[in-house]
Image 1 (cartoon, rainbow over the protein chains, first blue to last red):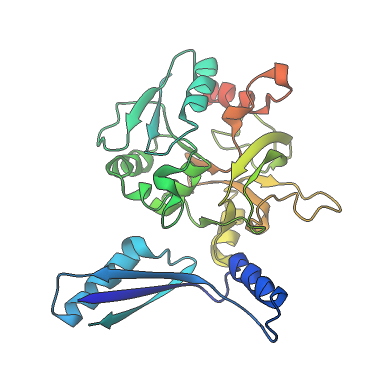
Image 2: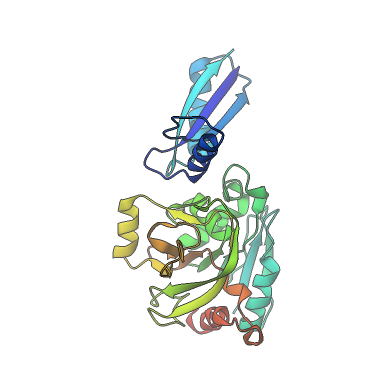
Length: 80
Length: 226
């Protein structure tokens, strides 16, 4: 079972990398770029078939390592 | 007087730290590999700078899970003084021994230069050799040094005099603060002021002959305050 974790910088936290990407996109000529926020995607291939258990395990992974919840929000989606 | 330096794969300022400690303490520190679970009885535990685990995921995040950090946490709770410099500061925040987190520098560049900073608080064991308000010159060398914590945490740090060092903003320069740290924070204490984390490197400013000895006082002071 594949679990995907999306990690985003919290809205109230400054994201200088997102700002730099926005500037670069505007420089490329893409008009109307208001804001860019960047983050991480982590795909985990899990040896599990129970989706509920997979989500609760992944939540625990996020809390203990994958995300730093001082600055990051995470969401989890289950695929395949 | 005995110190221990904890090293991880990718630590690289451990030798500089050992030299600085030997110069002031008169003996060489014990070096502890991060897989160890025991630290002998020492007067000071140091987490040095470097790029442990290649800064993967977040700076200090993987190292924070190393077995030795459970021991460091326990010793810190018992009141054993702990010093984290640069990557060491990042590891201490990732373990939760110190509040907040060090994020990517605001200008997205590795900053390597000598900066000026102010001693905010000379009441802690690591800063007792300075006077409050004293201006120091120390080198910084980091990519992820932008201190972040929520407003409540920042207010609490200030109310309890836990801000040890602040960068000095220079007129006309965007950031005398080299990395965008909130409230110009360069170093903080834990709540009972036995743990210090800071981004600048006192261990790289210990020789008067190259004009940078503000870090020597830091280590000399420890001999009397520990």
